Image 1 (cartoon, rainbow, N blue to C red):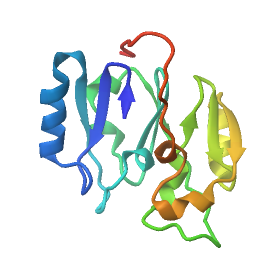
Image 2: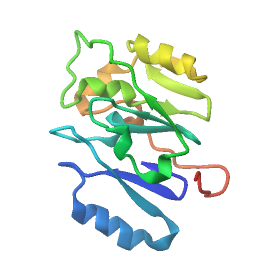
Image 3: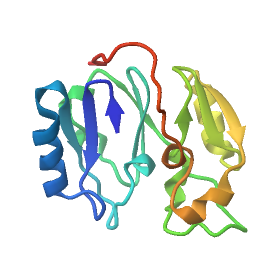
Length: 164
């Protein structure tokens, strides 16, 4: 998960220490790698555990993250604890956890695309000052993710900067 010059990683059955160390060697001093500790017994995707939303704001999964164990660099950030996800019924969710509700797509510092069925998350986003854009996307979950997994920005405006 990239935040400007900082990259957050989650050791899991998808990302191991060899991969994390490879990133550190490959990226050198231009980026800083921070490890996120998860209590999930089967961690797979960081975007259902830890989701930066805007400079100074990060959404975390209260079942998997002990906010007291987050990297010290996040001390000055607002740690937004995700609400319990609304139940998903009638869809095959594959290898996705119920916390797929954290897998959102930020369009800018305010607008956020959120799964339409996740009314609790939509309400929380509004309460936190974001402008949620509800979008039905559960048909993608059998592929193992949601908005953040299914998108990749290929062009970015602005300069690479540090958010810390």
